[in-house]
Image (cartoon, rainbow, N blue to C red; front, top):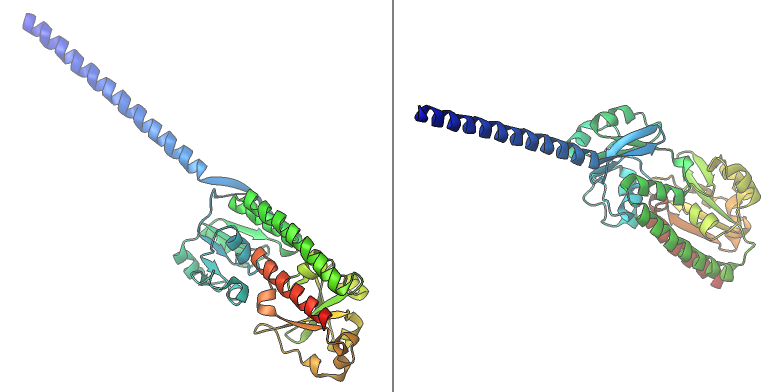
Length: 317
């Protein structure tokens, strides 16, 4: 009888222990699941894109930058793109910083899939965007919407590096102000400048926020544009003109873009061009369009250095 009672007690203890262990195990599993869910939530965040809220990685690391003008912004913020377009690869200003980035055609979806990006950046209106979204979270940015400073700050938001982006802006503003004083001391405050480039069959003059050094010339250094350039090109960003009309838009200094991705500036061989006052005074400055195409921090700083040196040298002649 005693043995039976003892056996019953022991059996009860074993059962209770099993129940207790099972409860602990279930609790631990539930805790692990909750921790996993919490970690997953912490690995993403919501970004207010132009198309609406989108879930993106909290700290994007494998970014495919399919919008040609933005790779330098990512480099400045410590993120090397895994994919870029051929336009970005042609800039001398980036040196070897993009040597490990794959040059990918916009519609080469197979290569993008193989690269396994965690984020894709392109322009709004990109016809490939729907396909990109099937590969990774995709953000479209409207080039015309942002000035070059706002552009960098916005990319800082995308990367979760707002402080780093603002730090560059602060340093840039101080540097630009000093450069402005240097240039004004050399050429004065009333001169004008025009940026000209031939692309395809057309010749263009550019506004104040369309790459080609315009951000430096018109904004950072405060050089004025001829009235016709300001009224016709500053709004849309650029103005297509005939080569014969260049004298109407010519400033005291003329910056001419040349390079592999632009057409030859044959207008410079004409008598019409040679009779422009700025040309006769030797105030023509040629720049590398393949590099000056961009307005990211790396490019802008290089452009500032080039333009300040060129203008002060011209003034000293």
